[in-house]
Image (cartoon, rainbow, N blue to C red):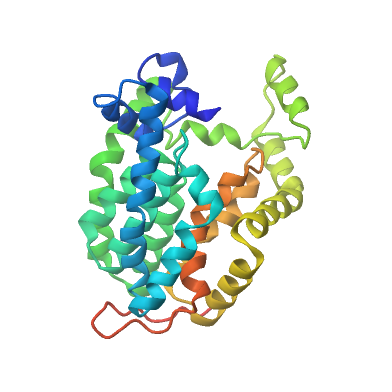
Length: 302
């Protein structure tokens, strides 16, 4: 039902809830050409789902020869779940497009554009901060490239800072995302979750919520992993993991969010595994050292 919030985001403030403005802005723009709100939102997904092939192929070419890069691109874009979410009123495909483009710009060392596009990803899905933070941390600690980090962060703040300021005015506290409320108590039975939301209970302490997150982590991780195996495919996951362990290049920073996700008290929806399919597709082809004409990065010792 998130699509209803995105579609009505600028039509009625009550529908904004905890959702970021990135996808709704594009829906509003598309409505200048398409009157029907639902159709306009679907067109946004279709367009960015179609254009995903461009940055994905470009990213794959940093590690693979042309035909192998094309194969990795095809594996991703013809995944049935990717196709499904590329035609509905959800922000997943837009986020994946921006995330893949950000990684491509990162490897091309386009610091300003990298920061700007990652900020658009953040305005679409706040978890982009995890990907952005890890890449900057790698450059800062391992590469000691302070200049790249500072310029990228400055590019990021150009668009992210106004949004953070707006959240400060609206919520009364400094926060990067109101979605932090998803770190909460969570039951396997959705009916119990709904019942808890309806009841006016005393506020549960942060310590209790964190304890519950660790307690529920194994079960949640198992559910997310099951979705990944089912909808990405067992061969892709196993081949991708093999490629990750063998190559150990900075592209691995696309995956830590998968391990953070089970801490959040949200249902293990199928769509949460979508951002990892493009990167698994590249590792599945077993990327070798980049061609000499491309940017080279040393392997990471794990």
